[in-house]
Length: 396
Image 1 (cartoon, rainbow, N blue to C red):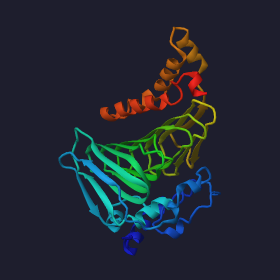
Image 2 (image 1 turned 90 degrees about the vertical axis):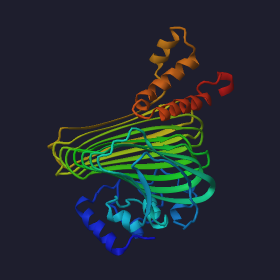
Image 3 (image 1 turned 45 degrees about the vertical axis):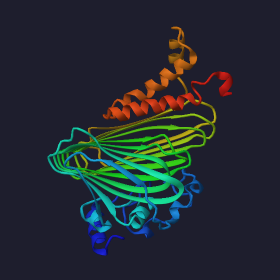
Image 4 (image 1 turned 60 degrees about the vertical axis):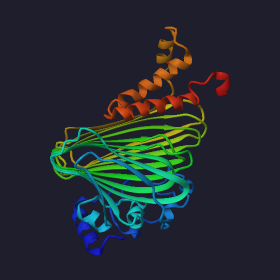
């Protein structure tokens, strides 16, 4: 079911004053004509190997679905709504072709609703599983965190599929939201995802994107504000193996005064042909006086044959800000750290292991879900066993 003309006109009229004129973030629109199929020469697609998307961008309709397993604390609901209803409750309109296709082809949306003033002691957990890469699946999800509520939401993706999804996270005034998306697919899966977050007045949100599995994963997290005083923290962890393409794109749109954003993404690469991409972009509009923002990306290259692209961007339209900056680094193991550890009798393999765990630990501790933190530590250990922890004669 497509968005009705009336709903579309209402949403696009509301967004008119917030349109982004950035070449890295096209203006939002439900109209597929505004999101033509890419050729690969466009700035927003030049890092993505289009042939490996296996026809997702052609927009073929499909009846395939992922299997959903949910854990919903008392008071939280998950209901089916139409695409028109999703637009009417204030979801952020698509700003690229995959998310526009997801809205057009998903046949409606799911609304995860956390009522106002509800503070959850346990996370909301949505486990999504695919059966085959032959299945083309479209996803459309709206997460609504009510005003003055507090909630953690985990989306876990496993199995295999060609999956394109758009998720809107609407965080009410004064609310506190912790949203985590885990891409733990089988080696042949393809996932295009967009998480669009609207932060209410004096609200705070932490969004964490974690990507380990899949043949190609391309995630886009963007934030804008519904009032002053909102705070957003965007975190990311990723680990690319041989032949994997993992791409994360970030956009923080400071469209309200006295707002904050902090971005920290860390990734590791190992194996021939492993490729990661991180594109950060922060737009500070003329009205956004008194804002603070910082974006950082760090990449650790563990073996030969890997490639990491890291491109931070700042677009500033006002000088009345508290602070803005960015940092990016891609490097191999720190020889001084390895020497320090080995000088104390620790083997080279164990020294490398400790360095990698130290690289990721500060972010993993921020996850805030003990079960997931343990899973991530185990996954890092499993990834290291493929190359870093193998004896030199086996790794050659």
